[in-house]
Structure formats: structure tokens, C-alpha cells
Length: 235
Image 1 (cartoon, rainbow, N blue to C red):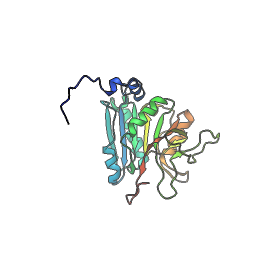
Image 2: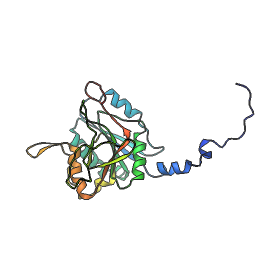
Image 3: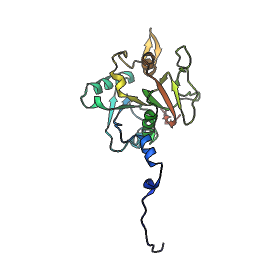
Image 4: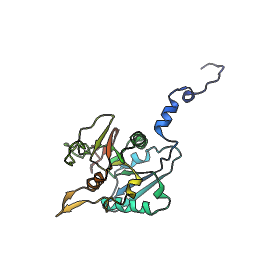
């Protein structure tokens, strides 16, 4: 190092002609208030929990984190969302972010999902990409909307892009809160089925109804989410 006479520099962002466009696309000047719901029936894996600590939230935006502890996952979502709707302040938030207890999320995942939502307002929900556990795991991009017959077959990811689907897993999903104010939607919204009426997970139970009323969902294949098993292996 040697002594230097330092002149004036306006800074990188002031000098970059793309700065304004970037700020508009990120949308941080708008309301991006977010409520995080994490159902946690039992213990949480350290790999999952530590990733939540690193989750970046939009600057100076309202954020609330709610654990639904010791509840079946469908009931946890239903009761927590109803509590939010009944609350005079929380009911005015813009987004609900669902994180499940066995999901490892990227630090910039939320801000990426919000940016996607702003650029694609036709979607009521956009989720991160994660797979079912095990050697034969499939992407949780459930169902091809182009098929006239409603289905929930796993779709192929498109790296870096959005893939519309008939339903999503709940591992890392950003919902517009206002959709849950729609009285047409069936209640309970989320219900795990295992009995005479069939077998189904609470997430696809929800989307089987929401699609009827025009609500659309997609998976952001640029938001990569891990799925940790009981042995600590991340699929």
C-alpha cells in the first residue's frame, strides 16, 4: 500500500444504469410483509433449522414467524391461517411463507420468490423446487395444467424457470394471503386423507379445490430446496 490522493466516486449503484430497473423488479419499495408458518410436530433437524436462521427478508419489511408445534400438518396450517385472518394486524399482511420442518431452504429463497410473484401476478402461490425423499425421489411439481383431465403427476423441472402445476408441496411456498379470504374455498383448506374417502396429502387436498376457482400455482426452479430425512441426509 502507498499513500493515495482519493477523488470523488459516486459508487457502484449510483453509476450503474440498471440500478433503477433492478429496484423495480425486486419490488422492495412495495408492501412485502410476510408471515412465516412452520409446522413442527416433533423435533427439527439441525440442518433445516440452521438454514431458517440464514433466511434473508426484504429490507425493513414486516415479518412474523409462527411455529405450529405438536399439531398434525394439515390442522397446523388450517388453524394458524385462521388465527391470522382473525387478527386485526396479521390479516393485512401480503404473503404467507410455509416452511416445513424437514426442509433446508436457500438464504435468498424468500426474496427470489417475492420477485417471481411480482413478475408473475397471475399466480396465487409460487414454491421452491424440492424432491420427495429417497433414491427414486420426484420433483414436487404436481400435475400438468395443459392436460384437460386434472392430474397430479410429477412434472419435469426447467432449470432457472417457472413451471406451472396443479399443486405444490408445502416445503417452501409463498402464498398471497388474500386467497384465504375467499369464502368459496372449501374448509378445512388443508386436510390429510387416510381412510374410506381415499388417501391424499394435505397440500394436494387444498389444490384440488383451489384450482376449481381459478387459483394458479407454479414452482420456481431457481429456488432449490433440500429435503432432509431422519438420518440427516438431504435429498
